[in-house]
Length: 226
Image (cartoon, rainbow, N blue to C red; front, side):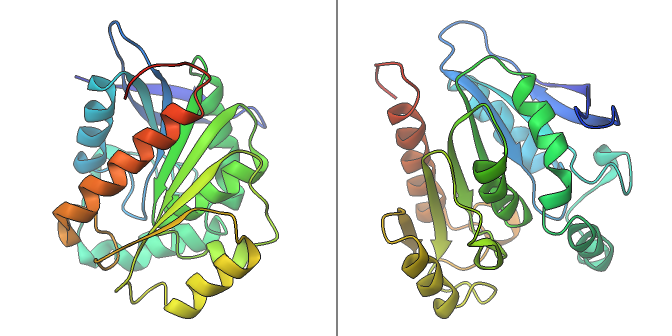
């Protein structure tokens, strides 16, 4: 359903890949999906196709192209974790690749939303604070959000976290809540990466998606049903 397109950084013109899933009629808006450390996996491309079927023109930018190109070659293989983690650390957990996020936002007609997973969940938080042109953001298990609490979201933002996530301990969740008591933080009976194939938890994935769609609909500026 989708295709690979090329986008350019508004900062220095660096070109990078993105997966695009377009919509026909009944368009609800645009969506930028921000990947985990594994890059733009087949699962994320399928997820983009799914959101496109729901009316969201979707882009999944390859945020690690500055470090290694060819996102189509990436797959969820534990042997790759050290290298992919190094890319995440080099980017300061998304802070240094927000130009790519901005390029994706600018490439879609508004209203534009963003969601991200793990590394992308932290990047989504930073995008909510620093990027322009977003209507709302949903962050899924962003492990480094607690390190960026000085970055205040400028658009409506919600967090999806697992109650049994060993990478995001309860103390980190409470720190986030203390810093932003009015921020919706949804907790699920799941561990880390409950939307991803390797740790999929059906009820949590389904409910978090419904809440995300409702969040986008509330902040789209357009009346209508999800």
